[in-house]
Amino acid sequence: MLMLPLLLVSMDVSVLYFAIPAISADLEPNAAQQLWIFDIYGFVLAGLLMTMGSLGDRIGRRRLLLAGAAAFGTASLVAAYAGSAGTLIAARAVLGIGGATLMPSTMALVRTMFTDPGQRTKAIGVWSGVMTAGIALGSVMSGVLVEHFWWGSVFLVNLPAMLLLLVLGPFLLPESRNPRPGRFDWLSVPVSMAAVLPVIYGLKELASQGWNVRYVMSVTLGLLFAALFAHRQRTTVSPLISPELFRCRGFTPAVVLNLVAAFGMMGSAYFTTQYIQSVLDKGPLEAALWSLLPSVPIGLAAPVSAQLVRRGVPRAYVVGAGFAVSACGYVMLALAGTDSLWLLLAACAVLACGIVAVMSLVADLALSAAPVEKAGAASSLLETGTEFGGALSMAFLGSIGTAVYRHEIPASPAPARETLGGALAVADRLPERAGDALATAAREAFTSGMHAAAVTGAVLLTVAAAAAMVTLRRVQVPENAGRADQLSPSGA
Image 1 (tube, helix red, strand yellow):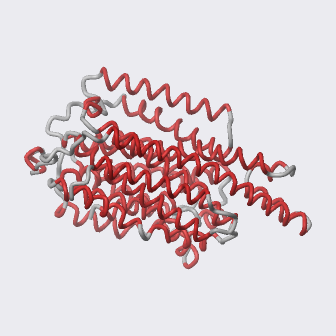
Image 2 (cartoon, one colour):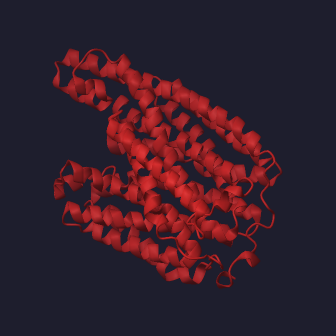
Image 3 (cartoon, one colour):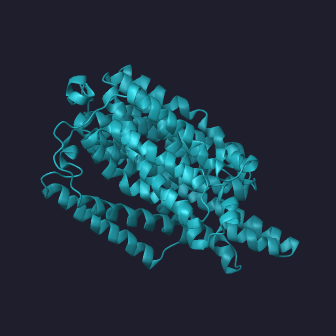
């Protein structure tokens, strides 16, 4: 019951990949509207995660989950039959609000439902696997539905699952909340959004558009608000995110390692999706289907890592090994040529297996270390860190790849020097021999950029492996974490 909404929320991150052309033809959005149709969901979701996690601790995680499901289902229906770009943007924004309630609520409920540490580790492993699988599945489902139905069908698939959750959730899911929550700090809500949104926006734009003073200023502004937010949480009587969380043994390193793991995952996706489509010249749907193959072994990564921990292997060593495996995936990526589909898919599988193993174990550690009454806030911090890690990865590794690409591409028109897609578009307009030469040179330059980014990623993940084994060596998951008697009476 908890995995259904999580699957759909994660799918909605990528569900518009192949629906955008059909939406553009039907609603005729301008360039800015098209950008917001695609991005508004992720921005709203990232900006509200901390707010919704803290709110769930106060009013009840099941109550917030069901309210989010109702909002998500209603917004899906409006989006499916939107008659204008503005209506679709508004519906996607509400979907982001619903997603921000569903993600921390599902993880917090897992934290309170599974009182046995071994079972909880397994359950959080399933949570991580479903989250990763949903992002991969969203683009493929989008392509299949748009090919056979109209674009609104990509939103209608949300309705049966949300209806099922609303009907059965009150009977199958226990309620839990903080028995002494204190007042809700409304002023921290806009400050937290002002801290998150400019940073996420600036990093994503730096990755796609290159260095620009406006985007750097956006990141700087967000960091200033982050400092203000942190100051308020330390000084207010009833903070949105309690500083006590960071004094829990193991919580801070778990959040940081989760951010690094997200960095590793998204950095590879930034290059591999372009490689399959533009270097190997696969169509969008074919590329998405090929991209599903690395997801097959991912389902085993979290259960295997959880089993190792249950059998007595120190968590520090398993997490360190996960980062090391992911670093090997980046090394394999650095060996790919311009026609290395199977090597690329194998690299993605190895990298993703290591990352999912890491993310499931550090999420379990963070939630077990945090007081059970603050499970919503703890899970929201983990997920906000995931958003930051992904955006930072695309900006940092994307900049490295772009710099190498521009250095290696021969003298050519400006669009060709900016991106591989621009080079291929220019090549199509040139005489055959010149066009083929430019396309070949651009594909080789992009692959070289991917190699440089992959080597950087391998080094960073190797450092993370060593850091994990040092910082987690003496951290133990409390055996009584999440006992039923720690819950409020409403969740008993």
